[in-house]
Length: 526
Image 1 (cartoon, rainbow, N blue to C red):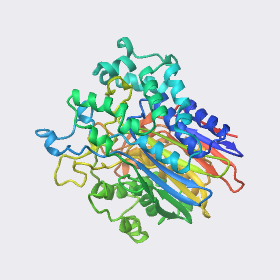
Image 2: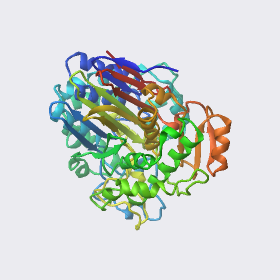
Image 3: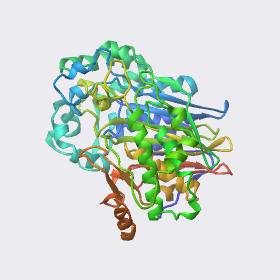
């Protein structure tokens, strides 16, 4: 089993080694964790285009050493001002791909600008340098991009502009080939020169919107011009004396606190890590949390969400009483995409940034906006067309969002930054990592490497399957089946179970970094 990388001063983790190196370079040039995090984010938008992009959303959790504050930023976009359920008359659901799946404005570029202005020491142009270089000069195409291109070949071929970039000459680019994105490089250069407003009010906004309108899409220039992200106060929970921070709705982050609150009612010293009882308990705690998530989660500006009740210890105790070790809780399922990239940075001043970004499904909508090279997300396709549904489509609304970066504090200081790709799997993998570290003392890499599960439908066929890696012993799989789980084995280190990364800061101030072997990432500490 691999060991965590340990740094004495700083640490960067991300799902692609070039993005981690970009963060390191910014720190070594005198930037702080915020500067480095934006560099990592932008670099991922270039070198991991199947997972994230300039045309997507992001959520951020940040600790500022000087002020002692924990702040969040909601970098998710809203639906268009003229987008209503009447826009989809005669359809059961919003299309998940193509021009009409583009229902929300991308929010990530705005988040870069806001965070740099609040906490950064470098210009946007400076932190975009690595991303621009890799877009214009190329980078070795990763195994994950190659696999996802194979899997989504038909989608990428459906739109000529997209195909020309991602499947040139009608072929899947070989792993390790030099992959160049000249149009995206040009767009990033415009951003570097003109700033945030270029994307929302200027040249890039006009080009993106013009293309959307020409293709029969739903967003207009006013939608881009009116976009703004939001600074937010994180949700705060407590697990066995540790403070747990998550971003609030429209993120599903509260599920990460709910699940731990439920698990806290059980004595983990009596439950062996990796045993049948361990997996069963976590699955059931998460399913009970999902039940409330599915009932309430949407844009809180449109619907009141009873967070005080949902995050209370008393309510967790009531939910925990529903768990037995001889049966399972029955649940409805719903589709949640899983193309995402999580990363984290801690600098030598003690600042910490935990963030996650996404296009929703692999390659998002599958549509590149004209000559910009920018893939647009399909996140808004998760809105419901059922007028009675809490997450129903309405104008200027944020949808139910899976992205949920997390932090855990020990005695008032950052102890663990963690998160994962994986839609429905995000709170599941987070709960595995948190309990393995806090209850069983595993280091971040060991906690990430250990066998994982993902319950329910991530996206695709209707399912209440409990997917488990085939590394689980047969006896445990049999016991899970016996109590009512519909167990399906997946390959060891299957990407279905997410790409998780973490940084732990120990009592000596050393930074322990772990990255997922399912990804193309590395932890860099020094």
